[in-house]
Each structure stands twice: as C-alpha cells, then as structure tokens.
Length: 478
Image (tube, rainbow, N blue to C red):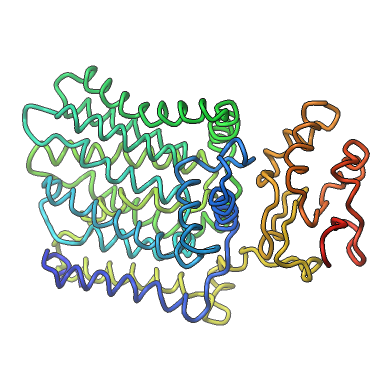
C-alpha cells in the first residue's frame, strides 16, 4: 500500500479519498453519531448569531468570534445543520492533510515524495469520532497548517515580507477560532531564527500580522459596544481554559487512551527521525522546525487538559511528517508495509470497537457515543419551545431553542451568581424581560429569589405539574 501512495498521480489522490471514506462512512451509516456537547454549543451559538445576536454583547458565551460567525452562517443554510457540521469537519481534515503534503513536497523537506503524509494524517484522524465533529480547534488548526508554507523561505535571500505578514495573519485568524493556537507564533519565531538573516525585523513583521486580525476585531466590538465583554468572555476565559483545562470534550481518561496509539507511533517516528541522516541543510532545519511544532502542540494539548474537542488534530502534522522516516526502505524491505498495515488495522479496530460485542471491555475504551448528549427524561414533553436553563445541564436545548443570551452557565454566573448586586439584577431583567422564554428550567434553585427580585419579569411564571423545577409562562401553551 505504501508503494502505491509514493506516487503523485491522480490515481493516488482518488485512492486516498476512497480509503478515507471507507474508514469513516460505514460507522456513521451503521450506528450514527449522536450530538456531542461541543456541537450543541455550536448549534446554539449559530442559532443566536443567525437571529441577529452580536457575540459578547447579546451572547454570554466564550466561543471565539470567527467560529461564532461561521456557525451563524451554517445555521443560515439550514436549521441545526448537523450534517453540514460533519461534512465541513471532513473537508477541513482533508484540506489540512493535502496542504501539508503539498508544502512538504514543494519545499523538498523530505527526500521522498507522494501522498504518504496525507495518508498517515487522514488514517490516524479516523481513530476517534471526536474529529468527525466540527470544533473551534479543528477550524483554527486549518489556518495554522496553511501558515506553514509562509514560514518557509523560497530563496536564499530570505523571506518575502508579505509572506511573513501572511503567516502571522493566519496564526491570528487561528487564535480567533481557538485562542491558545496563537502560541504557534512561537513556531514562527523559531522558523525566523533558523531561516532568516535579520531575525528581529522578520519577527516584527510576523508579530504585526498576528496582531492585525485582533486589532480589527477589537475595533469592531469597540464600536458595537461589546469590547469589555470580548475581553471578559473570550480572552480571559480562553486563557483560563488553557491553564485549567476545558471540560467540554471527552473525559480525560478516555481521551488519553485514544491518544495512546498515535502517541506511540509519534514517539517511535521521532526517535527514528532524529537519528536519520538528511541531505541538504534545509531538510535538517525543517526537521528542527517540526520538533518546535510538536513541542508547541504538546503545550497546547497539556494546557487544554487534553479534553478540548478535536485535541487529536494537534498531533497530526508532526506525526505525519516524522512517520515518513518509518516508511523509508530498509531491511527487511517488507517491514514498512507491515508496520503501516498494522497501524491501519489498529485504527479500524479502535474506531469500530462498539460494533464488536465485548471489544470495548477488552480494550477498556468505551465508545465516544456513550458520552454524547441525550434528552433529559424529565423534560421529554418539552419540545419546540423557547427556554431558559438556569444551570450547567443544557440537555433541554436538544429539543428546544435558547430564549436568552445566557448560553454558557459559567459566564452567566457573572449575573446570576451576584443577585445581591443591583447591576446584575438589572442586566437579568433586561435580557430576560425583552422576550420572555416560554419555559424556565431551574436547575440551580434560583427562581424563587428571581421572582422576589424581579416580579414584573418572573412573576408571570407558574410551576408545572410533574416537574417542580420547570416553570411555564402564563402566556405559553402546554
């Protein structure tokens, strides 16, 4: 199989697409993929943005601005378009793999050519259904991969100024999708040091490109009256999540087990790659650049607690590059082919483990679908209504729409957690009273206090039969 993908003809590209679809589609067709918590959050943000809400002014949510408008655009194409989310995630992974493969071939970063980089990139990405879902990290990582080509000088004279600015600009766009990705500017600095003659001036160009998207976005939110919330909801929580972990993806124990196989292959490939001789000086420098890329990816992965949705994508570029050293011809000649087939079989076994009885127990890998969101049985009769959830459990939104800006409960506690402050009570009354929700799900038992503080807003709600924490607006139908 490796011998087939060493070529660069259209037949190899078609074979790559066929292998990717063969690995991914059968599981979706046989079992389906339940909605994840990250996808539900994206759908809610998309609905609100499509409805005219301005992020950070009309939304209490920390979703990065660029992906917020992406989700709004997808919602414009269709109501809760889960299929579009899955299709776009697949397209982005394919773009990343082909772009990385193209950059390495064009720059002669490795003696061999072909589609081996894209092959490993896409095969390993199928090990978990976590990358079947669209996530801010996956979107932002696409910009990072496209920035790589601008970090490689095209002549001995050094960098073209426009290329360095473009590299920083793309990393800035990545940060506007997932904030910790701006740390890849450190990879850009390392590239400038090892490739450029005037490192300081070159890095200033890179830094200007990095800050330009943020300057534009900050100016936009300044005139829209949302700049303070942009800082509070995006910048501050983003770095807090980077330090403390973002528990919005798979559980850490499961994520680490899913990363075990890619990590083992990556470790073996790095050990093989660091000891392998390379010809031109440029190839040796590029190997150093990919080591810096790997260290940055590990830093972001560790900073996110390993639980950020789509975390595996951070390891794919260095894994795909260093794996090329594993596929080099050696003795015995059949060893690389067998190694890759073992990797392919292991990926297929892990991905389809839920279809084989008892395999999840043997591997100690529960299916990712078992951690997906499912409707709350206590709210089974609550459908197609505008609701407000006072608590962190957002399952009520699976079959209903959000009626207020309070999507993220941790951020909503800036108001609901300070009911002894006049300003917080006024903001709640303004946000909820503008268009009162049909139902309120009171998980935090705050409704009695809210009704006492804001009787004109919450005094029109009555408790429903059968669910003491569910309140219905008197003007809403059962």
